Image 1 (cartoon, helix red, strand yellow):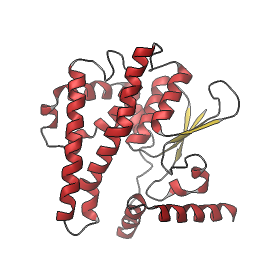
Image 2 (spheres, rainbow, N blue to C red):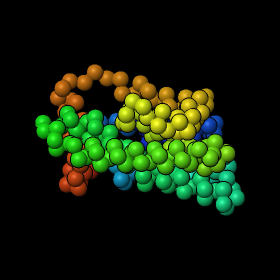
Image 3 (spheres, one colour):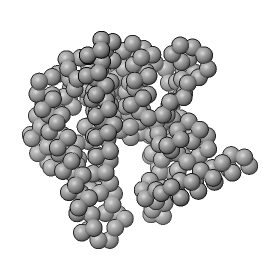
Image 4 (tube, helix red, strand yellow):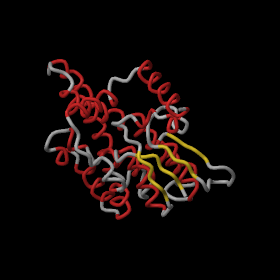
Length: 255
């Protein structure tokens, strides 16, 4: 059994989609990132970067004691190696997949996260829209560029890394699924190859199931004060804030 420390976001979906595709049994353990669960001592022992997802595999590759992993890219590589699925074994094909997996981790995820922050969340924090203009322009522009990179790659390939579905598709699709929410209304007309691929991957039954995993975790009515508190937890984190949260979590766990 694999314990998945999870919240239903694109980074969380990467893992549940892979687990569903591989047919591996798993147990979801909610990490409510808006409530600050990522700073609790028990989670920090698994994910020192205080970010979900993380997994604990109680039947690890190679046997032995349970193995703990954080960072979604590393988790997907591990699950692919454990099951022998969705990552080619031949060197050239393998690294075609891995280069796109790392491309997502370094480019698409961070840029879309920042674009979403400035376009959709920051307006609830700042009273001066002009302060947000540069951030919106900078990150939306980068997301637009990355969409073009994907569209060009998919103009010559069925899937991201070639003709075979792989962990590169899973890790990128979880973010690309939201592309049209950030760019203009004609996003899919501008990037028809990307649209074809988003629909193709999104039609896979296991992808549908994986994306729905834990969908009810966040179904809670929040007061205005609770919403404000969640924004403070999610954004504007500093070393001092994180250090204090870790200390409080450590004290709480010892009580």
